[in-house]
Length: 325
Image (cartoon, rainbow, N blue to C red; front, side, top):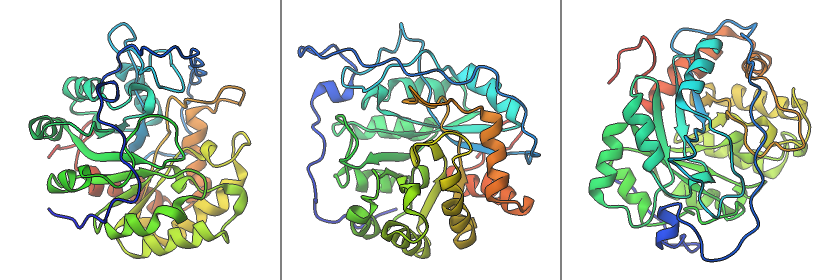
């Protein structure tokens, strides 16, 4: 698979060794806050979960003694282990989950690789990649179940991969997709470059649209144009990232419903477990988050598409009780 990569629009993050490995920094920084843990008692959803459903956005951390946080991380977390997430999957009725590299480990892929190697049935991966990663290392990640590379907007802090970089073409050759996390309404600033990639692009957390802007904000109109290309996907995940309020995140509902009406075939859903950076806010129960999808998509056939069919179009066939490929 090949792609057309546009000219560089912004500097890519440095490939210096601290970006690739969470080593101690020589610069003294205040300790980052310990993020509030998730609700330890997720309840079973009221909404029926179709067999084979996939959570398309989780983060995993720990054990802390083996995997220290990157010194530039804006948070630290208690352990959020694969086994704990698998128990959550079983409670919600899910078959598997997609582990997305967050900023906590910088651009080290060590933790993600270990998770995928230990739990090939239940997880696939999306990685934040160091600029100096070798072809051999990319091929190993591909074999372990990494299917996408994550890039973030300059609006997000830290030494994380920006868009574009030479990495885009390399991952396109592996058949991976690009996962991009905008900041606020700055999707408008990067939409042309994303569209010019001419490959599959998955946008995190409702494309980070500020929910208070409603369905008529310019960034929403541009997002619908991107969906019309047939190459863009949106994650119905992290509604708490789009609004300052607590569950049920009412301002997000019109945006979710508009996206579902426009392109249900290119939407996936995720919990965003363990919900980092929620200090000072109400922590949602993951059973409630699953039920929220039924508010956005009352039709069970549409939920089947979002939860079961669409994830397999993006990530391949995997999950508990499913045939892997």
